[in-house]
Length: 388
Image (tube, rainbow, N blue to C red; front, side, top):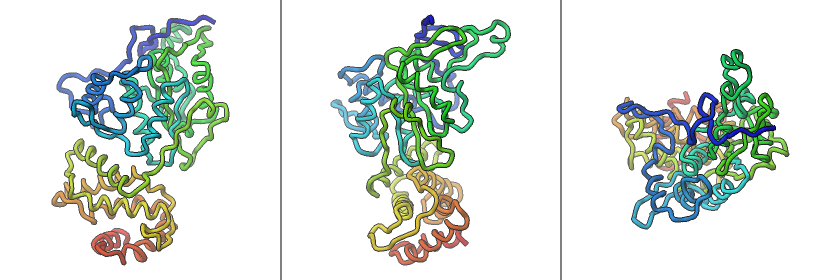
């Protein structure tokens, strides 16, 4: 089997010059609603790269120390403040970054809403400067999405050739020494998952139709995310799981940490959507987080009252969505100040996923906890109104 020069593959599948392919943004084009991490935090990455004097693995944009600083935040010697992208145990981030510096792939595991995708994107942005080499896992993800496909017009006209081959994001990452991402790995059918085994163990992607192979160059690695709470989960084979170093992302350990996470993300989303934010929202954010944490854990904050838990996950990500929706209501149909009535409907939608069982859980919580809690009368009335 011959090995072609696989250092670079153009978007159409032909050999080309080294470097990732990114869509060019025309001057004066509208700003993206949700910029990629490497674009949204380009200035921080630039400052970190300039201040970073530590050893960098091959083709990494930053050293492992700088990558961890980018994710966790910190202050550089010149006084530049790097904002935290992930609020959680430092050791988890250090293990994840260190894994990417080895020959083992990284699996970010956790219940829905624990920032797996967020961490994956920012890791790829900091390591490779490009977070877009992405395979989105679904029940219908085909093998071609991980390996390669074909330009059928070229294939029919000229037969199998390098010109007819269409590389997957994983193949491009191998060729360029970049970081590829696979989202929701356990949603992908098991036989398709296992196409990663040779890629991760041999660092080679066979192309039997051409009698060739694509060998990964230094700098290549892969980040996958997965959870075991949703329906449609396909467990990883033992052979594939051994190719990953698994890092479990936990739910926020304390209410303060979760309030901080929600506040930061709501502020970022609010800026992109031109919504109001600030200190006026903190009280309602804390209330939403309290409700979610109590129902999630099945006990009130003081530990005195046992609660039934609904069928949903009530994740931090859902809390962010509820508060962002509430801010939109306050902005467009109120005076811009977030109040209980603005978040009540969003909380109801997050809690009541099963119309029968979850509604009973929610009503019991309202009557036994919310109704009796000091300072929550307005919240109780707003929730009763939307529940009715």
